[in-house]
Image (cartoon, rainbow, N blue to C red; front, side):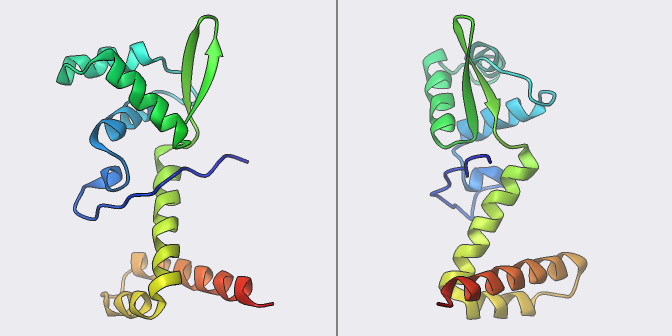
Length: 147
């Protein structure tokens, strides 16, 4: 089983994965996710792409990738004399993880307001999917609270 990513921040005013990651963290993850499958990535490979775009220091990229590994988005492996990084999640899996985490937090802390806001949205397939997801989270919460 893969470790759950560490998500401790949510900024609703930011776009996409930047809601839960810093700008450089998001750029690095987007570069890594663009690579095929489980392809291993070195700091040097990421640095060379980013340096062309924003003149970032090698140590900044290295420290950011170490932080992404601590957040469990990347896995570090030793290969010969270098460290290589492999994503623990696809981009879609990561998005699903942080959406579930946010929904759980809303349900557990503001269940009435969350459900009320959801019911106020115009009916669509996406809203029905969210409703089912929230219903499942609510059901699991009730089961966890029962003795």
